[in-house]
Image (cartoon, rainbow, N blue to C red; front, top):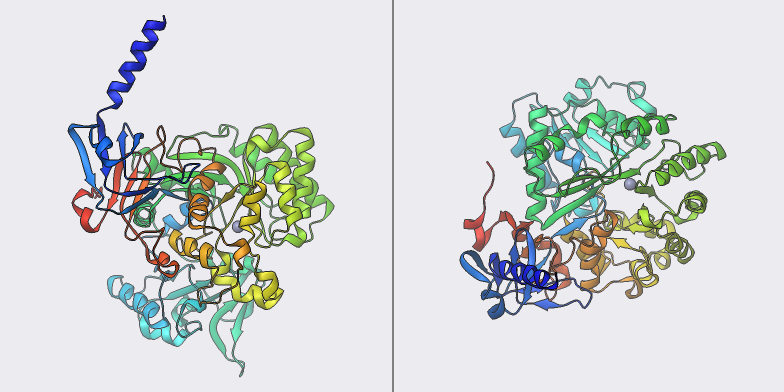
Length: 553
Ligand SMILES: [Zn+2]
C-alpha cells in the first residue's frame, strides 16, 4: 500500500514536470503570504505547477510547451473586482457610448460624434454613467446644445450617477417629456437661472432609474455581443474575475445573455453573482421562488451563484431610517439566507446608520453563525473603528470601492478634510482582520478600470487631484494589490483556488505594460495588461505579445 502511494506520488510529480506553458524572465508578484516576487512560473492543466528562478522553470518545458519570455515585465494575479455591476454593464457595452477616462468635454463629445457617424440616424446614443464632471478639464457637465451639435440626427441621453441626466430635444420628445409631470417618480426638468429648461432631468434615484428604463434596450444579439466585448475589455485591464452584486435596472430575465456566453464556453472572466430582491414588499417570496433550484455555490468556476444582494429589500435600500417593520422583514430574509447557507452582500452608505444593519446581522448570528458564509457590506466609506470591530466579530467582510475618486470633493465639503483623511479606513480594517476586497462599483457610478482604483488606493486623490486620505489609511502597493486579488477572491470562497500565483492555484494572471511596484504612483492608472491568462489560456494579448492573441471572432 505504501509502495503504491509512493509510485502514485512519483507519477504525479513526473507528469507535472512537463508544463503546458512556462513564463520566464519576469518579475512575478505572487501575492503569497510573504509577498514573494519570483522570475518564472510553469502552468499545466490550467494551474500553476511551479514557481521560481527562470533556469529551474525552463527545465519543466518539453517539446510542446509554450515558452513566454516576459523580458523583465511585471506579472500580477488576475485582478478581481469584488463589486462590479458587470452583467448589467456588459448588456449594453456594444451599444452605449463610453466616457470612461475622457479628460475633457471635447474628448467626450468626440466620442458622441464618432458614434453618430457609425449609427443610423434616429438611433439612441446613450452614456449610462461611469464619468464625472471633475474628470474634465472644464470641470463642468456637457450642455444640451453641445450634445445636439455633436449628434444632430440622433437622440442623446447622458446620465451622471443616479441624480441627473441630460437629453437632447429629440431625446426628450422620443420619451414624451415636455413638463415635470411627464417624468416618473418625482423627477423634474432642471431649469437655469432664468427658468428655462436646460434639457436635463434631476430627481431622486428612483426617477433616474425609471427614466433609464424608458430607453430602448439593446437587442438580445447586441446583449450577447456586448457581454463578450465587455469581458474582453476587462481582460485588457488585467481583470479575470468579478463579483456581480445585481443592481438597478436588472431583472432575472437580464441574466440570459451571460448565461448564453457561459453555456457556449466563451467566458473570459470568472463571474460570481448575487441576486437582488425583486418585488417591493414581497422580496422573501421572490427569493424563495427564484432560488428554489439554486443552492449556494451553484454553477462552476466561470459563472457561479454566491447569494443575496446588494439590495435585499426596497424598504432598506438607501434608507437611513428604516422602520421596525422594515427591519423585521429584512431579518426574515437574512435568517432564511443563513439557514440555507447563502452568501449575502449589502449596500450601505454611511457609518452613522449602519447599526440598523449590523444589529440584524448580530441577531441572525445568534441563531446561525454567519462567519462561514462570508457575508459582506459594500461601500460604507466612513466605517468607524467600532463598526469594523463588529464586522470582525461577525466575520463580515468589506468590499471597498473607489467612490471617493469621483465623490471626494463632495465628501470633504460635507464632513470636512479631517474626516476625509481616514476615508476609507482600509489599513485599520486589514490590521484588525476584516477581510477587504478591492473594486469600483462600475459602470454607472464609476469607471471599471482597476488601475484607476489601485492608484486611488495609493494616493487617495480624487479625479481632479485633491489629495484627501492620510498616510495612516494608505495601504502599501502589495497590500492594495492583495485587496484586488486574494482579498476579493475571499468573498466568493475562492481564495484557496485563485487570487495569488502559488503552486496549485489557477493560472489567472496579467502581464503588465508597466511595473506596478516601481512606476510613479501617478502612472499606475495608465497601466494595462499586455497578456492576460485565465486558467492557463491566453484570453488577451497586445503589444509584443499580439501574435499570441486568439480573439474568438
Ligand atoms: Zn451599491
